Image (cartoon, rainbow, N blue to C red):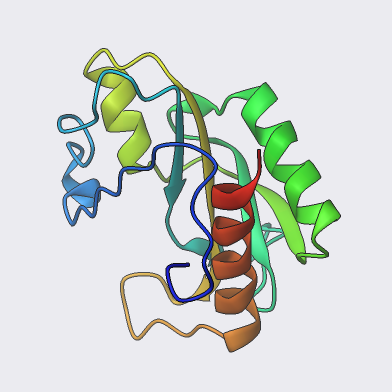
Length: 145
């Protein structure tokens, strides 16, 4: 963004966590002024899932319940406006860093996106198309006014 002379349309904070699997991922460290939390994680590819490794995925609901309808709609609009290939999916047996923030009392609109990944928690396989779609979606979100 710096090299191209662009800057985010709003203040942006990045939190990189490796504690999502044990349930406390983003439970702390999110500034009070944050109004939207877009979490990025892998989208499991498997039987009964819509996700595949050639698209980004928007998670509608997971084990912690549904994600914010308004922010999910905003993410869909951004993806469609920029021609970003995505799928929507539900993950009843998975959770995200953002859920840890909600459980800790965080009150923000939250959305979850990510590339389709095969073989979660193993020798994970991704495709550049899914990784590029997710990266483009993040960039489009950051620049969207």
